[in-house]
Length: 100
Figure 1 (cartoon, helix red, strand yellow):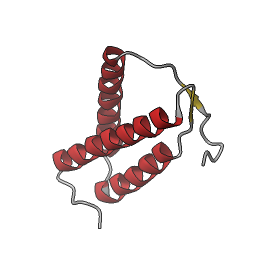
Figure 2 (figure 1 turned 30 degrees about the horizontal axis):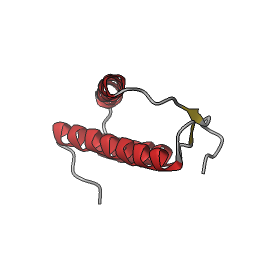
Figure 3 (figure 1 turned 60 degrees about the horizontal axis):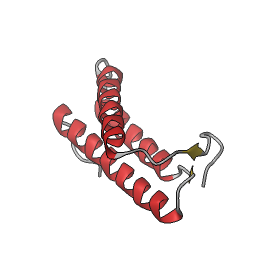
Figure 4 (figure 1 turned 90 degrees about the vertical axis):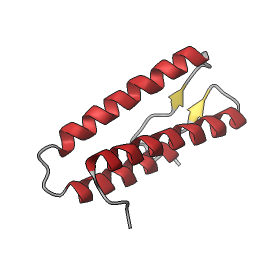
């Protein structure tokens, strides 16, 4: 599924503390990036919708090596759920309607 835009990801098995810290860092970076991208944008709704589609599509196409297929599937499912939760929370904060 990797369309050659992104490299195949190779990960070890981090402990829960490292995973938690990683999620916090990524969430914070995404949150601030969305704020900056949208602060002067006239069509916030369209840009946010487009970004959400691309972000979720790319996240679903990640290939992970170095872990079992079960761990890969579970990890990606969790990561996508976290990404969607972050996007949903930001959408609410910005007062944007849900996608139709």
